[in-house]
Image (cartoon, helix red, strand yellow):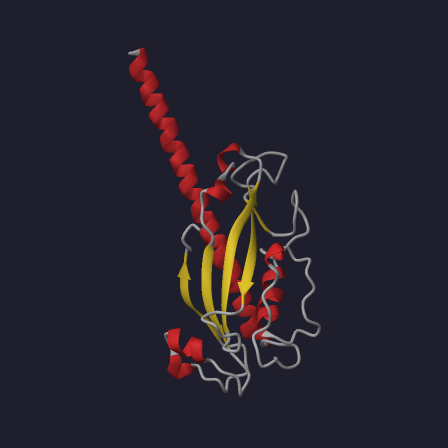
Length: 212
């Protein structure tokens, strides 16, 4: 009976841990999706560039500055689609946390303690400009990754167990620039033309990239 009781208790603990893991991964997914939707809605509301956009999409950050920790200077005024997207993604960053600026999601209602950062998910983004060999098409790739967690035991090691979420997006380009790659891959071409200079944008692919 003692052995049987021990086995049952171990099974219950394992099941509870699996549920917590699944819940945490679900929170990571919806946090990333909310971050992306916020940035695109801001672009839709106020437009892309502060004055006018350059003919290309902008530049990738150096590899050593990816993911974006909010410290690298953007163009001033904002004059390209990549920096415009980075600006709105950074709007949700908070200058706190153990080592870097990021978007911090604190679930205080889950863990009632005086340390409000114990159940914390910290996320950062990477914006890549050149997709399919073209940097003048309004086609950007955004990867949002979990980079740090709070101190609660169930979260430890989670960034190594959950893959980033990757979004391929088309962002409306000024008249006269190409939207070739977006037009090839996008799902709604009849409603999205190169003459659009507003913040029209859409996600046309979302995935978890394979482990390198």
